[in-house]
Structure formats: structure tokens, C-alpha cells
Length: 376
Image (cartoon, rainbow, N blue to C red; front, side, top):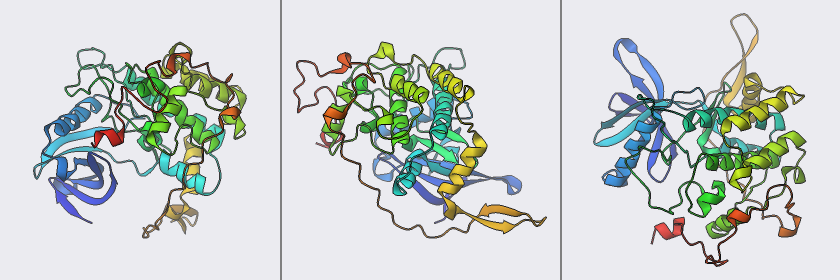
């Protein structure tokens, strides 16, 4: 597809969500200037909804204040043909979710050293966002609230970028959500999100811990066969140590366990603390893994995107393969949850602060709004 959209040329749609669609695009300018970008625009059928527009504008105003190598940069907020859009950095690669799917199809798990490297990069992004300030030096108070594999992009050059601050909570946001309303992907909620309680930056760290657990084990942590069971599983907070399902170095397992602590006082206080522990393990004998290794991992994970050709000096070089029509793939279903009697309750804390309250019946999820309830 090719579609002119203001001063941008839309080349292909690469994603769609409940509020917006994303396109790979090119910005055109004078004297042959061009720049690859991603264009995110509100879906046509909700483009006239004032609340949606307000949230969309809020996202751009918030994210543009974040400038960090591990956060996808916002370039522009505007209107074209009556539709609001955000122009942002285009990351040539895939989401962590797509990478997880590809490795799951091959019945393989990402190496522990690769997971640790990814965690360090995401911790860098979260620490920057959590402690970011506005132009006057006032804390923005950002909490992402949707840290999940689909919101972490990996480029074919080994870059790691956190995206989508559309659900982020900040002190100065215009649009607000009602108390107790859950935002974010259910399987990656923190226990306090699942209870509809007030959040701080430690909520994002729990969500990152869920991502880490899944990458290390190749299994789903809390996802169940329906949304209600998923939320209740998160509230219970019981989960196997990853070494129950895969070979995981003990220091890395301790770090993931602290990210997943259900008692807030036992969880890492900041992403910087988690990053420092990860880097300490890497320095003290953890396998070396850096951007060059991540580049090699990406190219081996998606070999169809590259081909070998002789370069100008006769050396064999990797070049971008000609695009082929993508085959339709069916994502493997999530594995059944582990039996309750296999859970090692000593690995994480006792979760006493997130057990259902006396008013919470076992088959209900009061105080939050699940997806099926929003549509009623």
C-alpha cells in the first residue's frame, strides 16, 4: 500500500490496537529529504470521540518529554485529513512478543544471558521515565502501566526500545481514569493493579518480572483460559521459580524473584537497583552478551529477512532479503497453568498483602473493570 498522509507517505500497516493503528512510513521534505518514521493515528471509527482524542494527545505530550536511547522517540503530533497522528521513531525489527512466539514455535528458550541483557536495557528506559522531569524541573511522575512483550521492540541492529506510553500515569496528565479501573494487558498486571489499588513505579517492575519469567521458561506466568482467572492468579501471586522449568543461573533467578515480590517492601524500589544487580551478575561470571550478540540473535531468529551476497571487496555480507509474502501463522496456545501443589511458595514472599479481601468472592473480581465488562 502507498497512501499520502499530510507530509508523510504511508507504506504499510504494521500494527493495530483498540485505539490506533500504526504504519511504516516516510517523511518527505525539501531537496529530496526523507526519513523513515512510524505513524500512529486514531482509528477512523473513534476519531471523533473527545476522550479518545484527549488520551491520544496526552500520550504524545508525555512521551515527547522522554529522551533516552531505550525509548522510541516522538517526532511530531499533528492532524492530517481530519485525523490526529503521532510521528515517531521507526524501529526496524520485531517486538519481544513476536520473538517469544518464534522461539516457542521452535520449542526453544532465549539464553539467560540474552534475557539479562534485555532486562538491563528495559530497566534503563523505565528508570529514565520514572524519574523524568519537565522543562521546569518538576517530576513528571510517570508510571508506564503497560510493560509487556508487545511494548518492547528489538531492532535488527541490536537496539532495545520501550514504546507506547498511551496508558502511562503521570502527575500532569489531562485525561484521568476512574479509580479502580485496570489498564494494561491483563497477564502482565501487577498485584496492586489487579486489585485496583494505587500504583507507584514498582508496579512496572513487577510487570517486567513477568516478562523475564516467561522469557526464561518459555511458558506463560499468569495467563489462564479466561480473563477472570488470569486476574485472580495474579492476585494470589503464587508462581514457580523459573528453574523449575528451565536451567536458570541462581543469581538471575534471585533477581527475577525480587521483581516478582508481591509485597511491595520486598520488591526492588527502582529500576536502577534491578539494573545494578543484573550488571553485577554479568561482571561476576555471567556469560558476556551485548548489542553485537543481540544483533546476531535477531538475525538468526528471523533468517528469512536476510540473505548472503558478496560485497564490493568480495567478502560475504548480510543484506536485507527481498520481502516475501508473509505466511499465515497461528500463535501456539498458552500452556495450561501448573498445578497448585507444584508451586514453591518459598521462592517469592507469602503474598499476604495481595490475597483477596474478605469482601472478594473467589469467583468475582470486584473493584476493577475487565474487558468483557467494558463492552456491556
